[in-house]
Amino acid sequence: EAQVTQNPRYLITVTGKKLTVTCSQNMNHEYMSWYRQDPGLGLRQIYYSMNVEVTDKGDVPEGYKVSRKEKRNFPLILESPSPNQTSLYFCASSPGTPRVEQYFGPGTRLTVT
Amino acid sequence: AQSVAQPEDQVNVAEGNPLTVKCTYSVSGNPYLFWYVQYPNRGLQFLLKYITGDNLVKGSYGFEAEFNKSQTSFHLKKPSALVSDSALYFCAVRDGGSRRTYKYIFGTGTRLKVLA
Image (cartoon, rainbow over all chains, first blue to last red; front, side):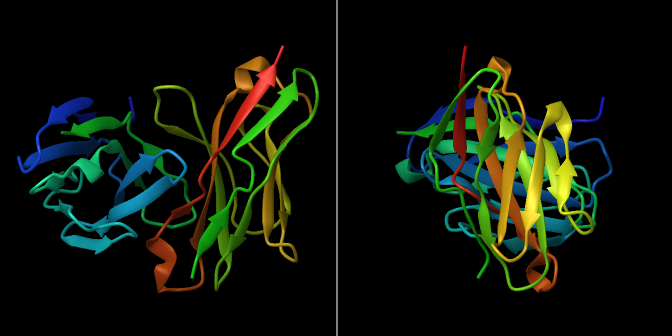
């Protein structure tokens, strides 16, 4: 089954404790992206990647890091999480052309206390 | 700069009535426009898109959307609403005419509530 998977689905952590949210897709997509969803703000793009070793900032990259060492994986790293990063996070992927829609993962709900 | 506006936080409609969810956009190049739907505790699902060609596009679950270049709008419509259409709807745009093509901008979302 073609899908985007994220782990963990739920995470409660404390300020400053480094964490990684994994994202993997099995559709051989070139493009992958991370979003955060907050009430009243919709989805905001954090980082995106056009292909292996090619990443770029979205609209809200501060406090996040990403890497794309393999085509199928695009982990999101929070080196020192803060409470304002409490949010619902989505990973998405699509083929390389911008004319094609994205496929979204199920989401990761992160709470930073 | 790219932007998307969904002016209504919530739209209520009676089952069987037509529904419209509004979206306006701003891009410097040609717009690639998308609608996604989010059901409770789920990721986003693609509904339909406008890339080029006919201004009226048809998508999943009986939804359609009309691209209006002069009004820079891409409103989502359905002739007859179902209770099961109740969900959160997002409009998104990519600028097809610039190096910003790989950035996505989403609207703030509109919650559709269909009343039985």
